Image (tube, rainbow over all chains, first blue to last red; front, top):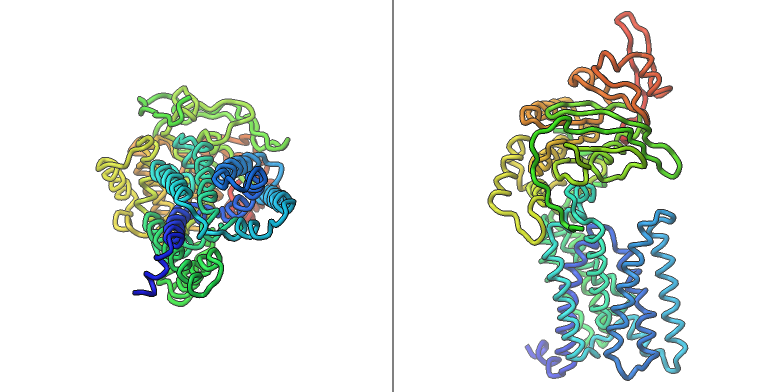
Length: 291
Length: 269
């Protein structure tokens, strides 16, 4: 027991565990849509594109750390809706447009931060997270915005499922397709900002994709996938942080490695979709057995 | 503008569907040109034509999903965008079958338009789903993951979804492609059931023989309407040649004219 309770003597560990659990759970619920709609690259790009926003906040005064959250949020929302708009104009393929914006924004962020003296440690925190630096105020912001994301996703759950599964059906049911799509982009953007301190921009996509993908392998229905994903995400956060405490490794990577380990275990052992006990997954559009 | 539109069920009207001079242009290339026709309640019409003829495009215009560059679609005198009673049934190859949904989950999607925002499906919606599944003979598979269905079952599930939607016009995009004969027969039996219920149907197909046998009305399309009417009127050698060009070979045999197609039929036009 002492193994579990000893780190709790440090308030920063308590806050870190709460943050890691919270972010893991929210990331997996949002991430279920990311996984099912094939938006992993969008999520990864969005996370990286937050960096210049953080950098501006950092340059304007590293003393006022609280302002970073709002700069990150603003950047994230602008980039998410910007990518959505670029994706609609048919000049370029969407992933090309995302790639251009992603790399450009990321480079801008690093250029800005590297112009400061003694930037190396802070840059590492932005890239890979610093969950032990989370304050109570940060935690409250994360809970507030994360909670809002969950409320929005549940309020428009049935519409978002229709849009994700069959966009043409969404259009013939006269659902506000563009608004719903933007709503999804906004929830991903907010989730990215909420997760910023826990895993950093470089590893954030793991929080969106990995627990949700693990849950996908183990469940048959979307609500179950979301619930299991949330549990796995939160567990990865908590277990990863304990691991980093005892093994003395960086917390963000430890969390991601735990999530990845769970994924690999599910991939091998899942009863239906796994490699050992499951059938091979059917490809898109492959004809299935006759009646 | 209302974000979530509510559409009330309408009285029977004539014609149910009227397309007037529909033209669709993609990047300067004409996909459809001057397509005009009418469809009445309970009427069933086969839409035939080669790959790339614009069959799916026409369906999307009728469903109000794609805005035509010219012309007008009206359903009971109003634009398709004002109705939730038009169902477009996707080609099976366009569907993500790995989605973690059950058959009942997908059929219940048909109710979402009538439910409106922030409302959960109630007992009446579930009853409607159950009834729709019974009509297509899938009641036993309601809780089956969609990835485990056969091709014919997948198609019937989408018909059930359209029934749950209370669709009065169903657009079936290549529903028979890739199905074996018993599965095709089952779909055709359900089409008969739809006729009883007054549902108008347009069905895109590559199978000219089946269209001729089972449909009284057909449209032969290749960007524009080549011919329209009964199979006898439409399926003449000259018109088929005009629509298909070299995709279709016509051979005189002792028992009449044979149409031999070598077109690969997996993708709709």
